[in-house]
Length: 262
Image 1 (spheres, helix red, strand yellow):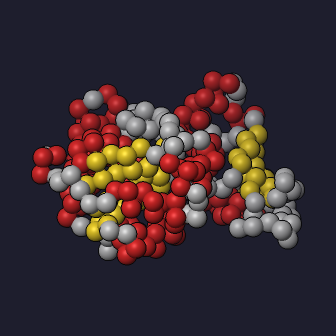
Image 2: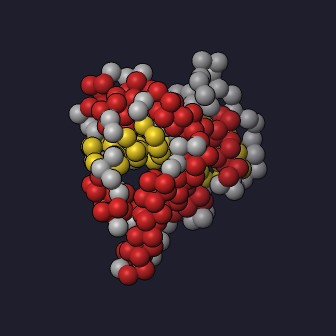
């Protein structure tokens, strides 16, 4: 399988093991920017194919290029960061090493929670985004399709797929070990991103006494409350905005300080 892929296949990136959170946040790609970033990479660097996998715990670029150094330099340039900010945290994977890594990532073997299933969907979205942006060619298409097949085989043939595992589910299980009865507890989430949304959904299913979302803007907190099937009930500021949600009747809307940024 890997012998058919030329050495011009190259992957690089950083994850929860190679980089601290503040660095990972600075090189992450919001979903709405991925397509533009892919086109920028292909247009401004000697890269013929590209795909970006960007999650809470990793940012990785898979590409077809004869100039890996140019692709690596692009990451810092695109985010307007000094090269030294990311250089010490990057792993570089040429050829077959990139293939092995993609297989491990898709199967959940490289995740913070071993065997978590969310990453496979995120890889599929990365491939779809590259296709939409026009940067998915035969090489990356083959890489991703083989990765998805391997992930399916791993879950079918090993115990890693015996039950659903995710960061959100693990958080609930840990909370249940610490607090005997979650229905008597109030839960605070800081932020309103994808991972928090998943956690809120899992915790809401346990019917806690209340769920509070602390975020820089009320709008995103309210969106999360709606997606998690809970209703707003109270608010304050900490330090930007809080949105409290419980199953009780709604209270007045929260207001953000005028200096809050989206």
